[in-house]
Amino acid sequence: MQKKMTRKDLDQTLEFKTNLEMPFTVARLETTKYKALLKQHLHAMYSAASTEQLRAMDGRIECFAKTSFVFAFKCADSEFGMIYYLTPQIGALLKEINTIVKRLEKCRPPRLNLSYFFYNDSIISRAPEKEEVILSSIRKNLAPGTLMLLEKRKGGS
Amino acid sequence: MVGVDSTRKCSKAEMDWLKNGGRDKIEKAAKQFNQKGNVPGDFYVSIMLPSDIMVSIRSIGAVAYQVYCFGFCQKMAARKLWNKLRNHPEVEEATIQTGKQLHEIADNEYYIDVSWHGDEAYWRGWQFVETVLPKNLFKKGV
Image (tube, rainbow over all chains, first blue to last red; front, side, top):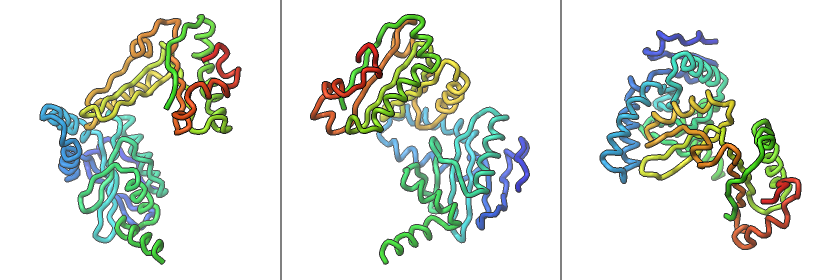
């Protein structure tokens, strides 16, 4: 069982070793490379938006990054995981992070809803069919690439 | 999709009944009516009261528009969702207001939306729904 996260811990990258074979880390979105990747992803997604709208979106990404956390798994050379968008209230925030950690320890990550997930090759997405791959990768202790390969083989044979 | 949406007047006692679980009963009855296969496709009933708290969001470039409805005793939950949504990068505008403001209704009125989705809905039209609706679902008719 892991120690509960505290207010001090929020600014650090924390490593968790659980009964999952893959260890996972928790870090603020602000301090990771995923903030820049998310910005890039959203700009590409809303390419039809006006410059003003994109500027407003950038401002919101800054706020979003402050209360969003990256839960990243490492499996062989792959890195994958979820970006959870949590509440801005500090007390509730700690509670939410601890709940997510607990659920990850049981291989039952909460559904993403308003958040995002990513693969090691820097693909950020929110598509429901890809979300399923990420969630089952965690449950099966496998990288998403390996899992998809195995599923393909299973389907082929 | 076919459907009706309108505002209806009611007495204070009826409004109190709707607020204190009556609305849930009607929506549940509609859900069961749908599950029993009385109408092919999806049949929905939603009732919005003037005291409800509505959180509405518009995405960037107005690609999507969504309204979340909370009962009058769920003020904290509505505020929490609104706080979360207004800083979401893909949301251009998030507003929190009462059902009265959103639907422009009086204190003794409620907004009702009854809709039926599916191919059959297109071919048979709303009249078909009226013929199969149980009488106790809408005592005063649709």
